Length: 218
Ligand SMILES: C[S@@+](CC[C@H](N)C(=O)[O-])C[C@H]1O[C@@H](n2cnc3c(N)ncnc32)[C@H](O)[C@@H]1O
Image (cartoon, rainbow, N blue to C red):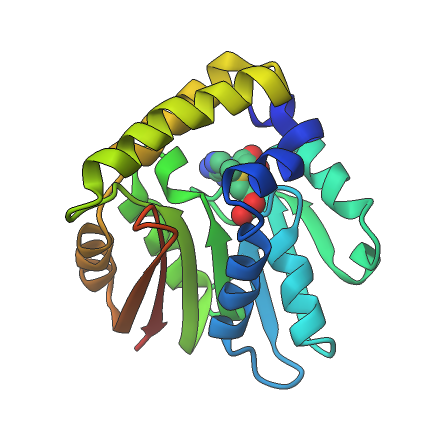
């Protein structure tokens, strides 16, 4: 599915988030707090928006960006400035890096696509150095008084844009379902605690349909 959506991925993201996705990726990069000369891993990098934002913020750091879609990786690697990043095929369930390799790990829209979020977060804990940070960008189901109108908007607009702009009804029907069906911030925080992370904070964005969560390895 991700190979199929590569060609229109950035345009659809801009439309669906009214242009906010790039700003959230910059927020994620800022939250990673990579020390001077440090290292960062962006998982499920897709077209590389978080990895490139991190490179801009930490130009003297080493940035690795991984994904299991070869087409996404080649799209990312063709962007201006991308040659300073190490792009690599990898499955988030089984990262090809040693324990304690990175000062920070980031990912956008990964967790709702994996079978076992706890396993994937344990892998991230393993590859982080002690004191290192994980920063997560994800969708979440809207709550509160705006819950029903926002959910209706997601149900109607995403498949409609998918049909008109991307001409791909199936992928964007999946996106709509996985957005509304994913965990709340509190549920992700509970998993992070079980895995061993500390100093966990989160904020919501975009009418409560997005969250940015950060945590530190003890
Ligand atoms: C919705 S895109 C997000 C891309 C980017 N992080 C962003 O914020 O725009 C999800 C990406 O996750 C990748 N992905 C999903 N499951 C994965 C896994 N188990 N291992 C590695 N990449 C995965 C897909 O190939 C896709 O590129």
